[in-house]
Image 1 (cartoon, rainbow, N blue to C red):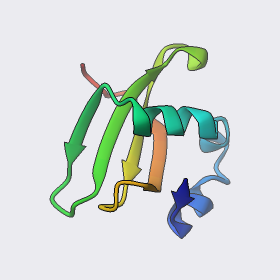
Image 2: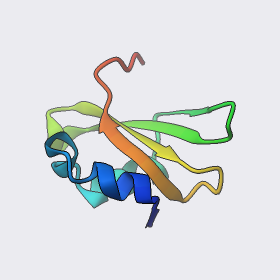
Image 3: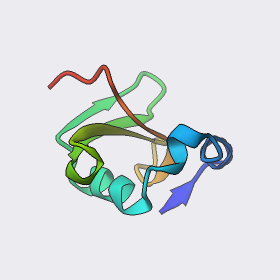
Length: 78
C-alpha cells in the first residue's frame, strides 16, 4: 500500500493515528460503497466492526492504490 505525502502528514493527527493499516486495506479491497470524484480520486467506504462499527472512508488517487486520505466518516449514509 502506498501513501501520499499529504496522508503521511495527516497521520500525525490524534484522530487519524487510531486508523490501522489493516482497516484501510480492508476498505480498499472490500468497499461497501465507491464514488469517483471529478478529479479522478476514488472514495471508498466500509464499516469497521473493531472500531465501534464506524464507517471508514479511504480516498485513493486515480491509480486506485495510493491512499491520499482516510478518516471515520460521521456523515456517511448507506
